[in-house]
Image (tube, rainbow, N blue to C red; front, side, top):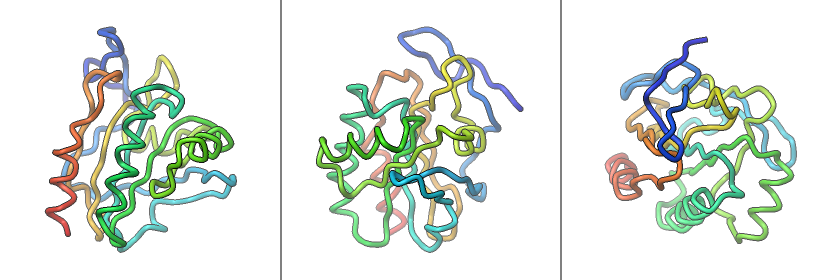
Length: 171
């Protein structure tokens, strides 16, 4: 499996990403994760929708909490043609609990804990921590990667305006 260093840090310390780097214009690779009820979900089940795929280290951390709540607010404004998926290594039960406590009901939270299928396929699995890097991928309704944001410092929030601009160009 390919490893890439020097792309992200956590509190200034360099980390290694596992998996091949995706580029804008690539077909979005399929992956399998679990929903909050342990049902396997594939990216291909969202075919025909614009997908904003966010990866976060853990919903139980302040920055991931803020990010997911913000995207939940934005999801309500984007319409039925857009799905926002937030993927972490958290267990599905923890994701379900967190969503209930946070009132998050428009973002779909998915768990990559079992096989790291998403993390390795999208090149955002952090080798040293077995967590996902903070990243956002915008996929068009044809399943092509149209925008990628890998957040350099894992403890920083993504550039929400840039993500929303990329989504609005597809609407």
